[in-house]
Image (cartoon, rainbow, N blue to C red; front, side, top):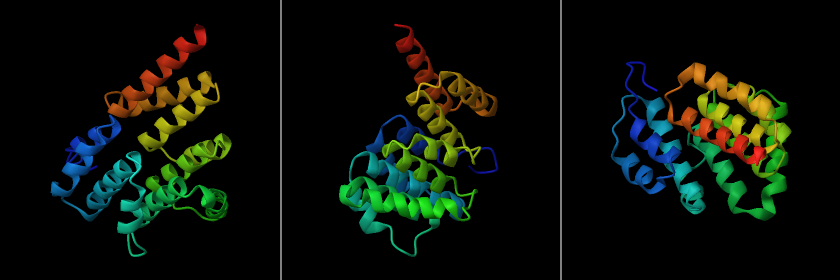
Length: 188
C-alpha cells in the first residue's frame, strides 16, 4: 500500500478478493501506480487472478527468471497447480527453501508457500509458514486453515488480530464470514 493513505490497488485488490477475477485482469494493465513496489503488487494480483481462473499457462509463460521474487513465488504456485506429476517435487523444493533463510518481508512468498501446503493438505506447514507474517492476507489464510482443521478457538483469536489491524478490510470481512459459517455449521 502507498504511504500517502490512498491504496492505489484498492479496486483491483477488491475485485480479486471478491472473486471478480476478470475485472482484476482487465483493470490491472491500465492502472498507473506510483512506485516499483506497487507495480509488482499489481502484477501479483493480476497473475493470481489468472491462476484463480486456472489459466496457469499465462503465468508460466509471462513470469521469467528476471521477474521479481514475488512473481517467482506466484509462478511456483501456478506450476504446482498446473502440473500434478511435479507436485511432490515442488513441495520438497519448498520444504528446502523453508528450512533455509526465508525473506519474511516477502509476504507473497509466504502466502504462495502456505497455499501450496494448504493444497497438499499439510496444514501444519501452512500454519508455520503463515505464523511468520503480520500481513492481513496471510492472517486470512491462517483463519481459513484453522477452520479447516476445526480449531475454531484459534481461528477466533486470529480473526480478532485481523479486526484489531483493520476491521473494515474486505479480507477481515471475508474472514469474519468464513468464521461465522463455520460456527453455524458446527452447531447444526
